[in-house]
Amino acid sequence: MAGHNKWSKIKRKKGVADAKRSKEFSRIIKEITVAVKEGDSGEPDFNPRLRVALANAKGVNMPKENVERAIKKALDSGSEALLQPTYEGYAPHGVAVFVECTTDNLNRTVSSVRAIFSKRGGNLATSGSVDFLFERKGVFVLESADHDIEELELELIDGGAEELEPDNETDEITVTVAFEDFGNMQSKLEELNIEAKSAKLERIPTSTTTVGLDEAKQVLGLIEALEEDDDVQNVFHNLEMTEELENMLAEVE
Image 1 (cartoon, rainbow, N blue to C red):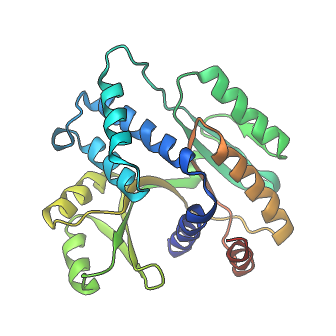
Image 2: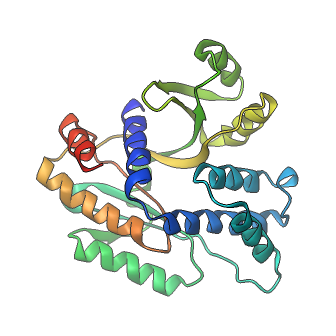
């Protein structure tokens, strides 16, 4: 799990530097839209999924007016419903890839995802081909300031925490919970009056694939191309984060 957390932190650091702001906002707007429509409510007090989406919006500094506009549009009965398909495949060198999308056009999305896999030396596979290689986990990122880690751990274990990993460099604490404890942890943090910087359901690889640096660059090229697609919300993979690869990514920042 620690390897996953290290990878997640590197992605967050890189995201600050090189992710397009509009792409981040687009992802959050889709989160809000799905949350409002599925919960049939634009009130966060009565819609747990919307509360998570709003926390994530705050985490990327989305302006309040953008958030309010997204909620209002989602409440409009005439607005289109969004679908959330997933796709599975392999990047070059046998690295497993799981793609989560949010779209209003399935044909466009599958065509785009298939093209990215093909052009980048990977292949789109059938449903279930790589799903078994991942575990769904809840991942909460908290500010570490004003928290005694030992006291906090005792409190959060009660909410289902499996692991707390502090990062002194970023002043953050990453809390991992089982999929079924996501809501419990959300409630526990609210009880403790702790606002998460982000709260997400992630797919954590149960085993990883190690490749050389040049091969890893090919794999990351495919992953980044997927992440840049407008219909793609999340991309998960089982590429091993070696020290050499970590150093290379640090140089890119």
